[in-house]
Image (tube, rainbow, N blue to C red; front, side, top):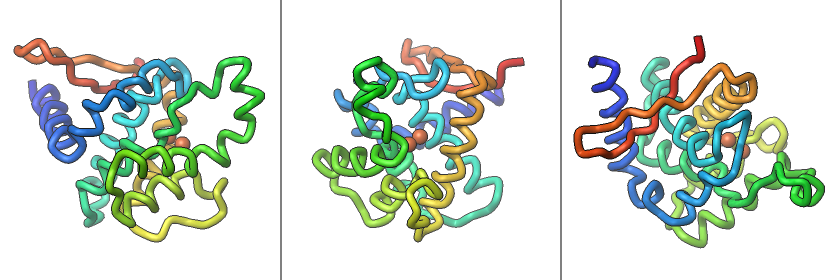
Amino acid sequence: MKNYNKKTSIFQELNKSGGDILKSKNFKSSRNYIQHGKMSVNRHSIFVAQTSLAISQKLGIKCNRRELIRGALLHDYFLYDWHTPVNLREHRWHGFYHPGIALRNAAKEYELSDREKDIIRKHMWPLTIVPPTCREAWIVTMADKYCSLLETFHIMKEQRYRKKSGRVIPAFKRVS
Ligand SMILES: [Fe+2]
Ligand SMILES: [Fe+2]
């Protein structure tokens, strides 16, 4: 129950700061694109946002939580599947280019702050040579690598909590 309440409150915070993103058609469409392992880009982005909050809390790093959440939700907003045979060739430099594509897509739909732009643009550091310049971007960069590792090696799987209202809350747990 404690775990359920914790996950509910985290998801409430995600909704408060990034509800418009979570409910948008384009963000929902990223459920159709696989990111790592069996995890979709949609779930990966939510996982990264949750992990970013956990890192800032655990390490006591003061940061703007709203920008942290919004930047994390949009960090992989490239909106294509880079695993399909055609796209695999087309997107062989995906690792290098997708932060720029995500930033362009996000800027078309949302008013981005400088911190949110930094998070999206730099989250692949050190692949994208220029390092992050704010705490929020450093946290998301760390969270992204951590989540990617767990997803790639299938250490983490999606867990769903269904609220009384019938609404599903995405959450994640280690595969035992
Ligand atoms: Fe990425
Ligand atoms: Fe990512």
